[in-house]
Image (cartoon, rainbow, N blue to C red; front, side, top):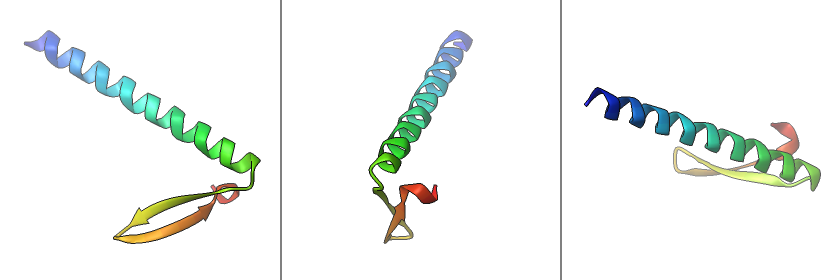
Length: 53
């Protein structure tokens, strides 16, 4: 049981690290083309220039 919990935590950490790397790569790509990213905050759509991040 303890080994399963450890494996789950390791998988969770790997997934989170992958998401962080993917977001960084996305921002860098958008910065090169002077693009913008679109987020949702409290139900509102927010556009942010990639160069502002």
